[in-house]
Image (tube, rainbow, N blue to C red; front, side, top):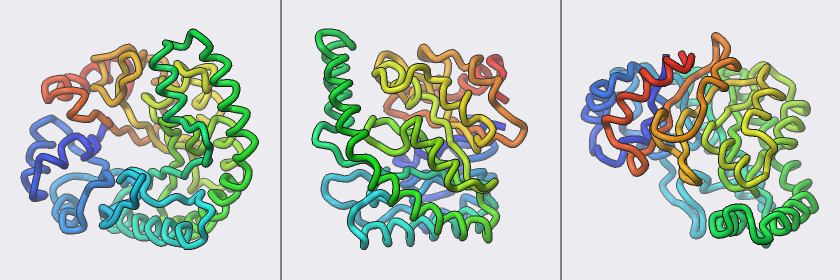
Amino acid sequence: MIALSTAYNIRRHNNPDSLADEIKSFGFPAIELNVEIPASFINKLSGRLKIISVHNYCPKVETVPEGRTIYSPYLMSSEDVEERALALKLTLKSIDVAAGVGATALVIHSGEVVTEFTGRHLARHFNETKGKDGYKEILSNFLKERNKKSAVFLENVVAVLDRVLNYAVKKKIKIGIENRFWANEIPSYKETGIILQKLDSPNLGFWYDVGHAVIAEKQGVVNNRLDFLKAYGKRIVGLHLHDVTDVYDHKAPGTGEVNFSDISVFIRQDTLLVNETHSLSSNDEELKNSTAYLKKCGIV
C-alpha cells in the first residue's frame, strides 16, 4: 500500500472532509500527516482515511522562528538548551498524535550542523556550475568545515533522540530518521550509522527520502543514492517516494529521472511507503498515474 503525504494538497483545504475527499479521489487509501496539519483536522482525518505515519512536528506549530521553515522550526541539534527542550516536547506531542490515530511511525528531521558555508550555499554553487568550474574544491572545503564542527551537534541529536526513543517504545511508535535535502543537515551518510549504532533499538530506524538521496549524489555528498539503503536497509522504517528532474525534487514518480526499480529490492514487508509529491512540482493527473507507475517498478 502506498500512502499520500498531505503535503500535496493541505494548502487547498480549510476543512478535513474536503481534504480527505480529494485524497480519496486520487486513489489513495491512506495518508501521512505532514507538518502543516492543524490540530482540528486530526481526528476527522483519522476517521476518514488510514494514517500510516506522521511527520514531526504535528500538529502544525503555531510559531516559526525567523530564518527557519515549517519543516524544521526547532532543532534537536541546537546549541540552545531551551530550543532542544522545545524540540523534545513537540516531538513527544507528535508521538502522541501518531499513537492516537493508529499510525506506525514518526518521521523526524534531526537538525543541522551550523556552518558558515551552508548546504544552501553548496546547492547554489552546484546549480550554477553544474558540478564543474571549481565545484569539487568548493565541496571539499564545505565537507571539511562540516566535519570539523559536526560533533557537538550530532551529540545533541543523539541525546534528544534517546529521550524520544524511550517514549516511543512506550507508545509503540517507530522513529524514522530522514536523510535531508541540505548537505549541512543531520544525518549525513556516516552520521546515520552513528545514530543507529548508538541507539540500537527496533523502534529507531532510517527513513529513506528518494529525492533527497538523488540530489545528494548529484552534489557529490554521497557516492551513490543507494548507499543509504545498502548500508542501513535492515533498519529501514519507510520511504518518501518522489521523482527528480535536474535539481528539482518532489515531482510525481514517473515524471522524472529516478529509477525506482533499483529501490524496490530494498523494500521489506513492513516498510512504509509514502508518496511525497508536491503540487508545485506536479499536477493531479501525474499524481494519479504515479501509483500504477510505482507498482510497475515493484514498489508495492
